[in-house]
Image (cartoon, rainbow, N blue to C red; front, side):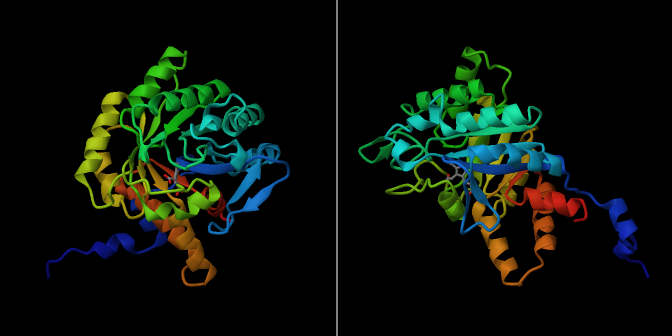
Length: 325
Ligand code: PBG
């Protein structure tokens, strides 16, 4: 009989680990943190079990915990008070804005940890959109200077990486120019190059209180039906000088992660978004799935699809699991 015996390489765990193609390392994980005003606050996010909004005074301890677990990079989201939101999202680029204070706190308590600053306006505008509004339209070119200001103020506060997420055309070029002109030519841009208008962001909008007050984001985020359009977004961000490419969401966009991997040599980042997290947690709470196995399978699949790094709310628990806890 002449046939292939694939099962030879699956016989024992040692044999399987010998030929395993993809691994999760703690260094691959980027942990998101939501910062709120006030003191001694830990607000659980109802739709994201174990995720909390925390106040600045608790940030130092949080960072120590994260660092001790082995996480080496975090992405910070500011959640300002409603009264500090306005038409122009000025809290995003205020010298003493919540994110600027947060960045300074992190860099003071743990200088080695990589702080990625999410550069967007939606958490800071009273209308909840990611750009300036005129007659119900989100303006593109008029929004770019505000993103430039935001990125520069985040850089001044000590951010290690700038991560623009608002999907205005030309945002990488605009931010690159502003950083360079202000002495931050050394700071990389992690671009949310490929970001779909997705129902998977629902829980995040509770966590960051950033839901649009009218309309939706479909005039600037991508249509989930499109694959080739992602290549056009990739192309322009490469030309404009992005240093990392984010694909978001991740779980139902593995084809896009693979396309990006095959079409560029930059580090590829998968954003395992809030809705993907919420679905897993809900099923786990019901006892319907084996949470640890499922999460490790999902994260490994991102790597198999071609991601180098994963932004994930599961980061802390993954570190514990990798440590055998
Ligand atoms: C800001 C931003 C969003 C997310 C990250 N940055 C929300 C949005 O575009 O509505 C979503 C992250 C998640 O769902 O985990 N623009």
